Image (cartoon, rainbow, N blue to C red):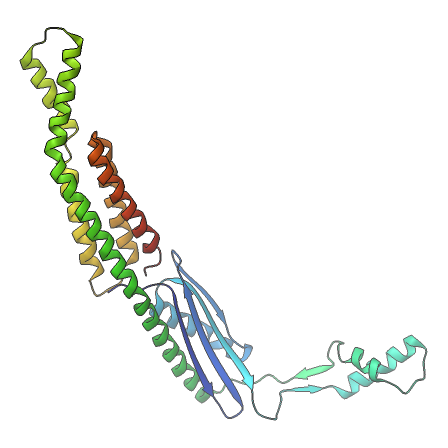
Amino acid sequence: MIQSMTGYGRSVLQLPTKKVTIEIKSLNSKNLDLNVRVPSYYKEKELAVRKKLAAALVRGKIDFSIYVEMTADETTTSINKNVVNEYIQQLRNVLFTDTKDDVELLKMAVRMPDALATEREELDEEEWQEINAHIDFALKEIVQYRIDEAASLEDDFKLRIFNIKKHLEVVNSLDKERIENVRIRLRKAIDDLKVEIDENRFEQELIYYLEKLDINEEKVRLANHLDYFLQEMDSEDSNGKKLGFIVQEMGREINTTGSKANFAPMQKSVIQMKDELEKIKEQILNVL
């Protein structure tokens, strides 16, 4: 069963004083590319989160975020009154004014360093256990999303493989006609020269030439690669890289068949096989 690298998972946890939203997004990538954003008071758990994500998602460009929205009346940020008053007094001295309208001065003062004090929230292990459970839930969501996304890819791959097999059957059916066509063209070329030739030598040279154009090995290997692709796609593990290697081997056999074909009707089928293979290559990049 294959999986797509495109996916999305989300979970929301309502705690007594805050709402915690966990989001995981995934796109295709050659390797694992993790981008983890968590509030500062959860930073000590970041390494554990990275390991969990790597084990579950394996590969892809992963964006993981924890958003915290405070819902209680209490706040961890307070105003340093003494500092702000000192700033206001200094600003008044700079402006040389005794005005009692300090609104504008206050606006400037609260932007100054240390005007606001934020108490560092300590990590609550029980709270983190709840968050960790919701991370697991979001991971299950994104994995299921990947599986569902891959279902359409799988159907498309099977269609393309089936089409290549049909074109390969056409190539097989044309092979005898192709060999005869080559024989006729060579005989005609010799006849046009209007010279006497040794028939035995001609037959030997013809056999040697036809051996160079023989595509039986390419046809057998391509058929094996097509079956192997379907077999690997139906295996329990999703291995996009392995499927990509098989696709490369298919391309080699198809290209060699095309270069040896030397027969227009057969080359037409080869081009159609290449077209189907290119469509597989485009989609295989998104398989885990």
